[in-house]
Length: 109
Image (tube, rainbow, N blue to C red; front, side, top):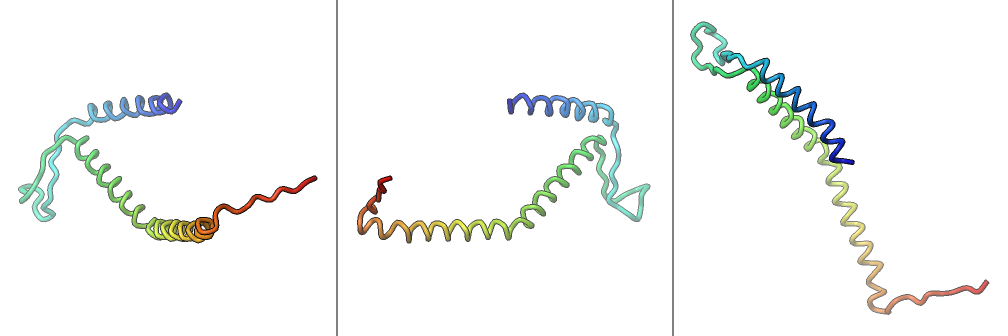
């Protein structure tokens, strides 16, 4: 079922991306010189869709890093909780190793 849902989402998305790339394949000049737009010191020429895909990729990367940094306090708290749980399990298991398993009491009804 999961593969079917992924296919239902990814196939149309792929078709839209390919159509976008085909529709925006004209070459554009990207200038990095704010003072001379006629003769820029450094300029790139590339198809428009490449520029858009690169900028979207950079946005995803920056957003992912920002989310990862924002979640730092939750990861620290989770590590502390895991360490505390491990410590408590060790404390609970220590008397059982020395004395053997605790007897099970059965009540008669």
